[in-house]
Image (tube, rainbow, N blue to C red; front, side):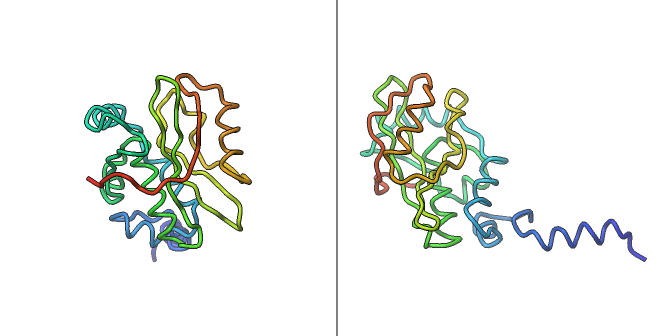
Length: 183
């Protein structure tokens, strides 16, 4: 007779697909049901890589809306590291892979301070705007998470302004098409 605890554990894993260990990004997305599953994975697994951010900034001379280099979501899934654009791209692709009705898109945060600009993912659930941001470094950890609902990106900007973070002076928050390239 099998151990009852082993049988119960197997049943729990089978009934909770977001817990299953996926071999790759596509498997993970197929096992996730909502944007919260994406956020949970990023929160538990994704780690900000300051060296990558600095490399990208030096290579492109900008992290602004005119230049960006991002990792393929599959590579981000395997490495579990990156900077804000890697996290935003991963979230956008995963959220839209779960349900295109979320309409996940790039959101650009223009920073007028000496710190870097920032990329996040905006999406809709029941016609309400949410922002997913798991690509922050330790100084901006208060930005990390799923935020909303908001009426507009201006409301999200107000949230960012209320955080009073070092090296962050948000001048604009706006929707952007992906201007860069995938590595």
